[in-house]
Length: 495
Image (cartoon, rainbow, N blue to C red; front, side, top):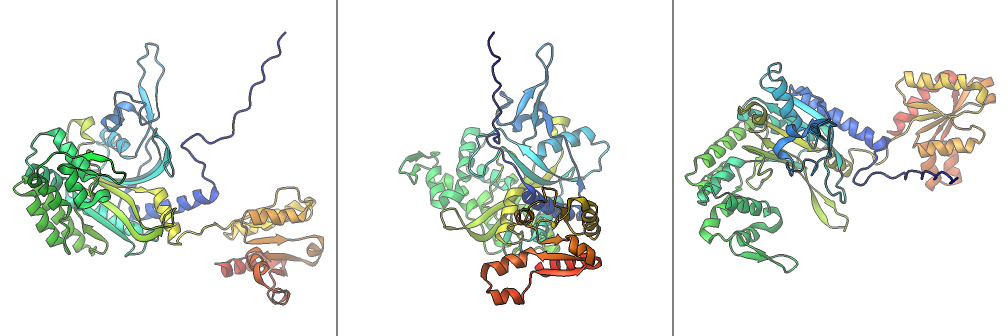
């Protein structure tokens, strides 16, 4: 009889495109999201937690390829005897679920409906450096009003959020544009309903940040050589026909009035373009009334995002301070948030246009920015560790840790093998613990405890002489009743 085949052990590897988040990162993200939620709540927005799974039908046309519902998302078909079960998918953003929720519950929700949502989303895309298939988003949206006051409010709230989490004024800029203005430019170019030509122009405009004014002009007309020497075919427009695009992209002036005047020239007689400029003017006036000057929020025609998605104002929050990239070169940190008005999304469910506007913050990027600014410690402080000198006296040690916790101090009892005391201190170091509490039999008899300042001890060990070490003790003997007070004193001195 053949031996049964041994089942191979599973490999302990993270799935491709995913990652594990440990205590410090999770704590930092949770704290930042709590702070952001506080700002949103102050603005009158309500929290919403929608399902992580939606039907592919609900996700709809915003999938990369609706003919293949598992393309771009993690999707599966529900079992059905006839093979006609619903296709389900993990949500790929937080906006599509909002449209479904509002359409489903609109009779019970206030109008307008302000909501914020935070959580993971999933995209079945090719992973790369810093590009994962699961990541966090943090959204805020207003559904049910076409008023530009809603857009101005979103921009003001985004500005307040960045400052509240720790990005100082002067290190960020919220930039605002309007998709209607761009549509007006396309009309001024005489493209009419030539959808192919319009798409080609929009794709070219989207490259403005990379190739600049001259590069866009070349790509709109006869083409250009890229950095590798390869020739990129142009759209084939004449110089005069391309001019409105260039005027639009370079219309930013030293003040809002000048920018709006330049945009009026770029859109010519286009009504939709004029409507977009009027909306920008309203947003600017509302922000000025709220005290949000151009040092925080500005009209900037170079913001071109979500060309197939947004229907009116668009916004982008850019961090303007410099960092060093992986090759040691200086560059600006860049965008951490974006959004805009999307008046067609809910219409898919209701058949009626429902105006909506909102933003999404890139959680991981904003966390990285806060680390760059030193607003988040490189390494989180661990708990106070109560060491175990006698395993038969665990009740005494448990009483100590309970007192510390009741005083609001993070603390734990060592739960490993207490036989080797050195291993307990190594454990405390690995936990980045600020303090170790020691009570052996002698200390118990005398009614005292030893409190070891691990942070100071590490600093002294790095550079102090023997004499300096004697003058600056890192271990203190205190009465058992003074345990909490002394621990608090040391923790305060370490801040």
